[in-house]
Each structure stands twice: as C-alpha cells, then as structure tokens.
Length: 507
Image (cartoon, rainbow, N blue to C red; front, side, top):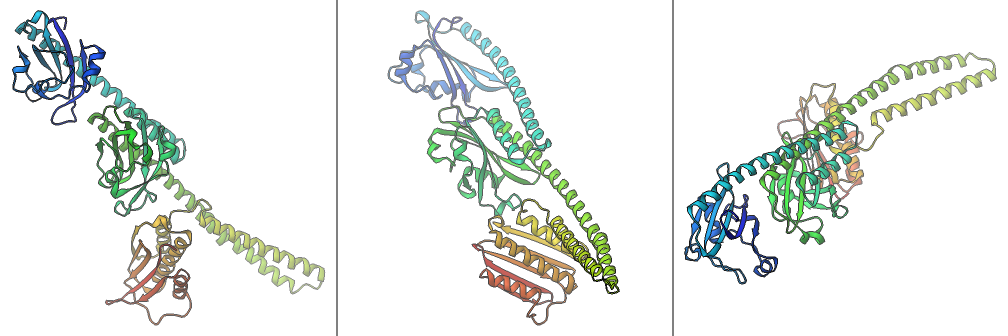
C-alpha cells in the first residue's frame, strides 16, 4: 500500500481443497472494525477477486465496476474504483492474490505500480514456499516422534490400551485438532466384510468420556466407510458422530484407516470445532502416514506378543510332557511297588503306614495331573473363540498328515461363553473323530455366526455307518439339545462325512 499509494489492501489465500477457487483466508487493511462488521461476511473469491484463479496474470483496472466480472459490493462497503490484483505463485500455482484499490488522489494504478507489486508477490512466493517446506519438515519430524512414542510404549511392555491412547493423543497434536478417537472392531481377527460395528476404544479431547465405548455402524458412518474401503477421507462433517449432543460443535474431520499389510485394524479420527479452518491435503497425508506407521508398530508388537506366548505354551507343553512321561510314571511305579510290598507285611501298623503312603502318592499324582491340565489351559485370560478354534484344529491334526481348511465368519466374538464353549467342543469332537477314524486326507471346518451359530465339518474319509447311541456323536446331539439346536451327521454323495451342528446365536 505504501509503495503504490493505495488506500485499501488485502491478501486472499486460495483454498487449495476447493476446485472452483475460494479463499481459505482473507486479510485486509484500511477498513476499520466497525465498517468490517457492517459489511459482514468476508469475500469468497467471486467476481473480479477470482479472475487470477483461472488466469494467473495481474489485473489492473481504472474502473472495476466497468469490468464484466464485477458483482458489486455488499451494503456498507466503502466505495472503490481503481484496482490492482497480482497473483502470488508457488511452484507455478496460485497460492493467493495481493489486492490494492483506490490509489491516492483519484489516480489510476500505473505499469510501474504493477511491476513493484509483481516483484513483491514474487518475493512473497519464495518466502511462502520456504515456510511451507519448513512446516513440512517439522510435521515430518513430529510424525516420526509420535510413531517413536507409540513404539516406545509397546517395546517397553506397555499394554495395548496405553499404546492406543498415545496414538489418539499424538494425532490430536499433529493436526491441531480439538478431538480425536480411535475405533476398532470387537473381534480383530474377523474378516473386514464380516464386521458391521466399530467400537471407540480410546479418545483424546473434551468429549472423550462421552465417546469411549460408543458404537459406530460400518454401513452408516464416515468412519465405517473408511474402515471398509481402507481409503482416507477429509470431510466437512462427521456422519454418525458418537457424541450426538456435541455434534453441532464439530465440523472438519480427518478419517484414516490403520492399515498394516493387507489388513485394517481400525480407524483414527480427528475433529475440529465448527468455524475453524478445514483440514488440508498435507494434514491428511500426514495423518495417513502416521496411522499406517502406528498400525505397523501395533502389528509388530502383537506378533512379538504372540511369539512370546507361543514360546510360553511350548515350555508349558514340554513341562507337562515331562511331568506325565517321567514324574507320574515313576510315582505310579513306586505306588505299585508299595502295593506289592504291603501284601507281604505282617505288622498291622506297618501295613497302615504303607497304605497311607500309597494314598498320599495317589493324591500327588492327582495334583500333578491338575497342574498339567492348567499348563495346557494356559491359566490366563480367556482366548478369543477364533484363536481357540484354530488352536484346537492345529492341536488335533499336529501328528496327522491330514490337510485342513478353516473358515470362521460372522460375529463370533458376540457368542455367549456357553455357546462359545459348545462350539469349541463340537469342533474338537468332530475333527478328532475325522482324524482318528475316517482316514481322511482333507478336513474342512466352517464356522459362521449370524442369527444362528453353525458348525460344519466335512472330510473325504470312509464315511459313517449307523449312528452310535453313545460316544462322541451322541455327545454332539446332546449339546445341540441342551441349547435348542440341531445336529446331523451323514455321508454326502461322493463319500466322506459331513457333521452339521447349529444353535440359536442368542443362546
């Protein structure tokens, strides 16, 4: 303004997320606060102000009202006639525009004025580019630090919830958001297409207490669509917000999937209050990269925990084998030896003492067997049913050449503990029968949970004869009766055996 003698000046920053062109920011000088308040809404980049968006060359007018693109001024706007608009270019693209109006003493802007402002705009473009590069460098460093924070918690042995909370906290800081949350499926091992709900497990921000525990439908929410499509989204409004009473307070949203390999473990969402600037493409890219790296860290930690758990299970199995094969057998042999000795005893007192010792040995054997059972059971928190079923099939077929194919679908995690136990028992019994009696080369296990839980085991073995009235098959029928279900075992056309067990999922 000082260089050209203009009375009014402004800088309009183009909204790079809007293809048609509008301002994300508009800073003005020369208009007092009272007049600005009377004018009301700031310019959006229409009319003459938007000319350089499509054709990035300076616009110099002696009378802006005479230009065909002029759309006039709102009521209360000060009169303006002369006009000079010069684009600020960053890497050949319009970042914004410098606007000057009303040259002093009613004069018009000259070619010299235009040259001065063009030089200023060029210098501004270089400075802006440098500032953006610096901001991108800082953002990248902050992202790496955030991922390091997540990894540190995991590698230090912190629990999963703590690591997820760090993800939500750092996402809030990285994007300058007001609220963030992380939503995940109840059963992390379920196929994506079988998941119809996500539960918010952690959150950061003022609405966290209200958000955590809320359920988002996959088919009717922004977060659900991102989860299923595995594609990040930048939205002006979150659909199906988990804190409906505060929904009106929030507008801009970034929604990114937590992708690791071919899988997706959840979605990370950041929100800003309505009226704040929308998230830009750089912030979306930053969040996407952070979420992907955090997901990899979580996946790696889960793999490490599983590996450690497998080592523990292997140790337990080895200890259990040693107890069974060596300790119990030696105790049993000692008991038999004492039994043989007691028959030759003539002293009632000695016979009584040896009988007591034999009883004590039997109690020790029973205690060791209980310990072996606990070792096989794991002694910790109940495992998800999917893991239990896969472990059962693996255990039953470990010493057999039979090939297995397992498919588990539907909302398996929603089964009651009773139905989950029945389902595991049915799979164990049917697979055990197939391995021991059918001579099958292939066994297919299908478990699906909808309105009913259905277990189907098919093998290509010798088939079945007349159903037995007792034993394993009778047990399966009894389990079905116990929960109001059905059981059938037959030989399909082409041979083999098909076991079909079903019960209402409501249990």
